[in-house]
Amino acid sequence: MSMRPRTLPLVLSAALCLSLPLAASAVVKVYDATPPHGTPGDVFLFTATLCPPVQQTPGQVQGAYSLSDTGGGAVTISDLEIAQPQNLDLDLLNVFGPGAFVFIDGIVLWNVPPGHTGTGSTAPGGSVDWGVVSGWTRSGFTYCASSPATICTSGTQVPHGVTVATPPAQSSTYDLGTWTFDAAGDMSAASPYIFFTANGGISNGQYLVRGAFVGGSVPALPLVGAGALALALGVVGVRGMRRRS
Image 1 (spheres, helix red, strand yellow):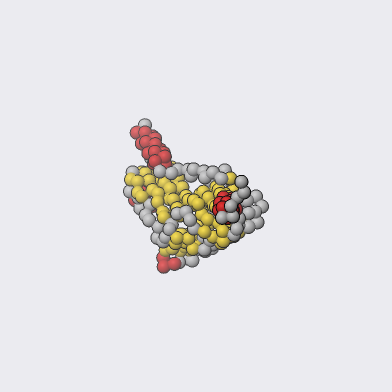
Image 2 (cartoon, rainbow, N blue to C red):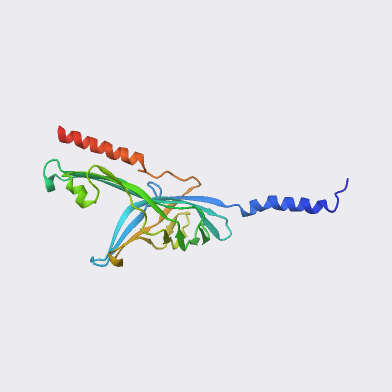
């Protein structure tokens, strides 16, 4: 039986529709800034009153970034989480006397909702211009324990033995600028973005985002939530036993 003329356009349309998803399919790429994958990002502290005015604190920022690249000049953020773990355990015997210590544990998490699209390519040697990204949120906690207790209260503004939630972000929009991709596929921001401004603009804290290409699976960030709190309480318990022994 021969195909009727009015049926042929329907068959061709169906074939075309089936082929479109294949042509527009996107490749998801994941970049990890947690050890041992590549080099974690850095925290930059800029204060005009210091000399030299720029202080760099390496390795203080970690993260996981998932990007969807169509290969047609559009790259979309599927997942973006930046973490700044905090862990400090110091014996202050020489400063405050026998039994003196300070223990700080916590994490600051920055998240961006999926869907923001930049222009460019994640291919080796490529770059993506993100521009201003909206919808940033900040969460996390800080736990402090010390002896004497005034070390926590005066130094971190967190009372001794108390877990304090990280305050919301000062802004929900940040300019991520341009990310570049090297021959190995790893990515690095061309410049850091400002996440904190104080003293009327004199002091700016900046994050430099970068990460190693690890495939298509998002890694879990360390020291998140209940696990970190349990670690904090466990260390404080050990400290308490030391003081009683």
